[in-house]
Figure 1 (tube, rainbow, N blue to C red):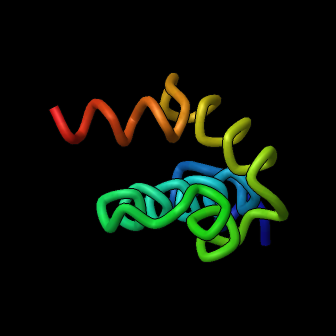
Figure 2 (figure 1 turned 30 degrees about the vertical axis):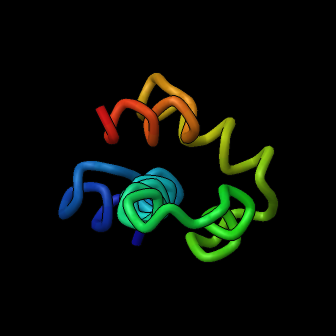
Length: 71
């Protein structure tokens, strides 16, 4: 099943889920929600987990991303 999923999406299931969560978090950051609320709403265990994963995928922290969006 994992091979089929990877073939269809280009990513293994866990990586795909992380991508989806970060995309959802980006949308929520536009709404100016507190970072802890964004983390929980996007499906992360806590704000630290969210920040770490967001930075791994985007190369920047959620706070910096929000500031850059506003500029």
